[in-house]
Length: 315
Length: 104
Image (tube, rainbow over all chains, first blue to last red; front, side, top):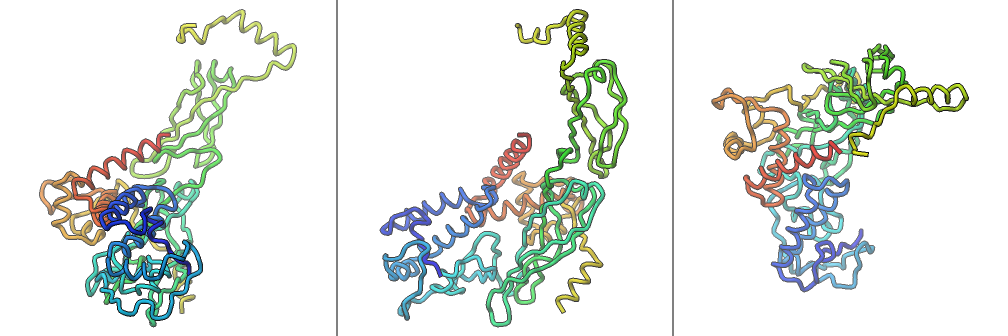
């Protein structure tokens, strides 16, 4: 078990006053709250801060913690001295949150009865709905276009018959609804944490993200594709093949098209009651002048069609 | 036993509710999903945090993304001791931030 330096976690001195500890905690809690801070380790950080504050805000727990001594370093292997806490009595927080948010260090010192509220915690009671769980899955853009079934395995923390926390793999087959967009969540009722006292299970929320696609960039229901075309296709107009999520289609490029122009393929985006569109962004690719004949053509173009593409820039 | 359950899942994929803008929830459904009372929802409506369609509570229809607004507001209140107007402001700013990040 690793020693936790709660003073270091909150960035305060060991002789800091209660007010100072409270201010340090509030400031860090705002900074690392997982709803506000999108960094991957924000939730872990937030819990560590919460645990440190749980101990240091309570004069009894703080005195007991200080009693262990100052010779320990953060992360050092730690065994509590026997009867270290004799003479201290800890009152339970009364929340009874069985979700195992505290470190082994904390639980060894203060027991699971000392738990208070924490992120995702629920107000307790004799009978309570289980915790809602949140997970993320990565899917392919095509899965959203056609709909799919994806198998996911989550680690569920449950309390076994002896009251210990155990991690159980939980395998689910989840239907990916047609037309789901990145950032949307699927709610699976009663697939979350165990209820307490016969309460129902919590729900499971699965947030969807897309693997990067080699061709298509999604924006909500719309799909963007950059389409390379030749100068003559742009100037004269042409019908060219274009890949879509539904396969290849033919698209008309109007005469006089320019690089950067956006053409719309209606309803070729992600499906839905209002389906998205596919936007094709034209990119004119200029052939190299790598033969005498090609060079002559370019020189002829310069002579026949002189133009200043920078006139709008005033140069 | 556990194996048998997993096999069942293979044959019957779970179908969840997609939290998007198409589906609409009643007041009762929103309370059930978020595990809170109708009064709390009404407070959030008064604060402009939720904007259901419909004139009377029986006709209220909430958009699914409002589930997330409720959940975040509850966590902010519980974890950061923010009051309801503060939570509403944070939610608006967070959504603006997300929109800006998306456009980058």
